[in-house]
Length: 387
Image 1 (cartoon, rainbow, N blue to C red):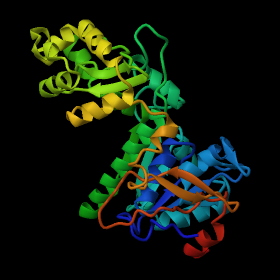
Image 2: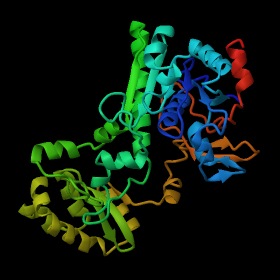
Image 3: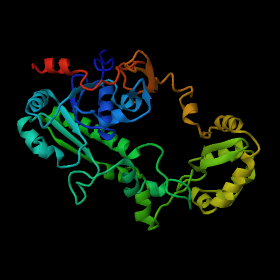
Image 4: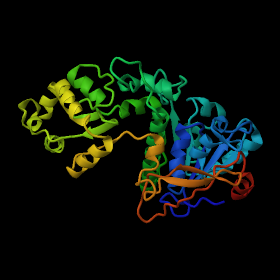
């Protein structure tokens, strides 16, 4: 089955060699495949990408692997075998980008580091995603998502005040690195287009965690106080948090003084809007505990659905805290094509998350090509390189 997005995506004609495994690198190349690139996974013959062994499984195949590697091709190569190295070098002759997420030094030991490849293949963009990047005293240290969430400060600001450290509920270490790698690779492609020069992209999961801390580092450097977990509220804007309605939690995001007044009107609390202690965001932060208590008392009188309707009519951003099951049933999901069907390889289909990158002029089909079997595209790939 051909990749239905490849012929029309903005990266159509770009060939990516994906030597990465598990999540950070494969997520980068998934995005590139979604944008139309041809992605060829180069996997070790024994077992392939480690993610093939991660559950849940559907008819013996990893749905985890399928969700990150749909629409790609696979060839199994032993990079210590001379014949397989020759095949890889044939692919390198034709590729635009190589993506890897080995520990720094691994590709050099194999003879395929940036310095070597750049001389032999001057148009090839080299992208590496690793724990700490290719420079610095920790560059060769091993790294996993949760380790990076801890080291990079992400876990220190996640969870509830006084509670145990909490991991962000998805692999933000790997996904963040994959996103930044994809952004950098696309920038490198533009640079090559305008100058003819290929470059190396060096992305560190640790760096990405720092970058994703948003305002926490700024607040520490300005105020000198170490940010900590705040549960479900914003550190510098209030009311901008989760409260309890009669039947469950509700989020209210009154992000400025005008929205605060509108919120008070919607809650039928004119005294709250007129209170000088709440007149500005700075004063609301200073009197946070009292304000939270007043709002909470009012919200207990109606259900989440009732308050969401009332607040929406007043133009105040609000919403429930949906479960995953509820989120994928939201009325925006279908019109935005955010669940797509992918063959599971055994006659059935998987429903996987769609592509959030909507670009005018390019099709966003409701189906995607399946994830490849290990070495499943070998003959087509060898034919393409003339071997």
